[in-house]
Length: 349
Image (cartoon, rainbow, N blue to C red; front, side):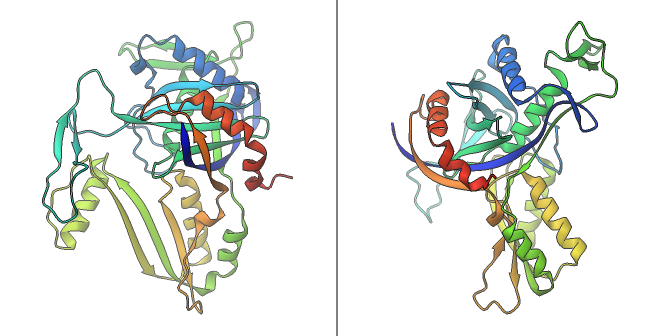
């Protein structure tokens, strides 16, 4: 057990359950997490909890990693900690590795290591749910991605297909077919009802208000993003960019790159609204961000949209199961014990 910095980013839960329009008929955050835990316990194997087809998308063009259930922890409070296992990309059962002893400037090549058939390379991700106040938070170790997009898609797919409220049957192709939803066997099937898990980043609007109020003074747009080549589209974008720069090095799907670019541009009111909306929909890597520089600011300061995010960094005493996975129950206990201090960033009334 040792001290480690964790990055906690909050999200507002607008809907979780089964709705007709905006009217919730049944289901809740608590109920969904309890049912997810019960459903996972019935799975024959860990791999049976992978419910995201690799082609699933949410909101924009996100490439989702295959995701597996690990644990739902709940101890002496109304809060939960959901732990998922996110599969790392590989190329035909192989992963690229570099030696820890590699020195900058040498020509040490990466090694391609074959994965055993019975393992799933990946990382753990953690989500702290606070149903009473209607929020959850991603909990990240320094330098890690939150895998929030994968979690959102995972919960949505579970509500759509696997809860006790789902009426399903297997079609001729062995695929699950959704017939509808009803609260329990004693009630008739609800018409026009749909499952929802709708969330948005919790934000302090002061920075966004400043950007909107000073739109006419914007002189430069700045964009940075982390690109993972899990799709051929993103792979080809990076190949074309490198070729344009005169670099012909082959790019593989196991690689990940961070890029940053700037454009001299003053957006219209409509364009700025769309830029902010696109950023709010991302729910992805902490590195991904959109920024603005203003006329008359000789410091060249970039006002990042992430400056509005309800996020806190704090060191905690962390207990690990192994070299990768934090003990979920211990982590939940630590978060619960610090809840009053942590949720101050939300500025709840």
